[in-house]
Image 1 (tube, rainbow, N blue to C red):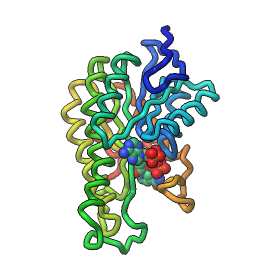
Image 2 (image 1 turned 30 degrees about the vertical axis):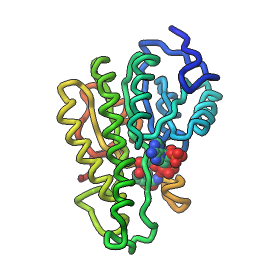
Image 3 (image 1 turned 120 degrees about the horizontal axis):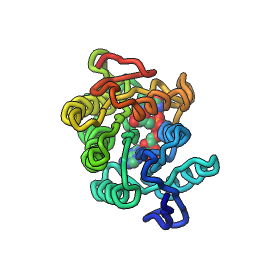
Length: 254
Ligand SMILES: NC(=O)c1ccc[n+]([C@@H]2O[C@H](COP(=O)([O-])OP(=O)(O)OC[C@H]3O[C@@H](n4cnc5c(N)ncnc54)[C@H](OP(=O)(O)O)[C@@H]3O)[C@@H](O)[C@H]2O)c1
């Protein structure tokens, strides 16, 4: 076991890292579903890199989980910023030494909440901003971090998607969010096919309607329930599924 202190961006933190211990990176880990995913993965014994675009918030969140004796460190990451993604990739390669799971959880919902507000009332700018985080963010992260998984003999990528991105159920309203999640699902299929032979399993997971800042107080699920299927997909056995779309650990239609 080696002690890694003064991690770049984590100067007051000390993480104990053992090369045999699997490592996971979670985006948007400072709150909501991402935070609970960090907790559940760490409880399963993974070392978790909790990332957040606000460094102080990421640090506070990781310290909360450290109080539960969980192996969690933090790193600043804005998934819409390529330089930020590249810095994380260097950190993972040099300081963590391996990567087993990437959870592309960071997401934004920039559409007005009235379902009646549709594509004709929206803007190209809103669509582009939503895409940049919800779809291209996952693209950047996977491109930057898949090599670490491949070097390690394989890994798991989980794209946190949504039922609102299902083409089979597609309807009007929330156009930017819906289109970004449908595209994220397409990214899942592309990556799953390309990475299959390199033993990286890539799946989309819908957490259901979850009580978070995004889901709102009327949502039917707790963050614990929402995180469960994501954690399942991040820790699939080597013969697990790839290129699928899941909710509650069960396949759902695209
Ligand atoms: N809640 C639901 O009902 C529901 C349903 C289906 C799917 N989902 C999906 O589940 C995921 C998590 O949602 P949530 O409900 O936990 O939402 P949330 O509470 O609003 O949290 C969103 C997280 O994403 C982060 N984020 C946004 N843009 C980012 C960026 N550019 N770089 C890095 N992090 C960024 C936020 O960071 P900041 O704190 O810095 O803003 C925050 O940590 C999302 O992908 C969402 O689309 C949620």
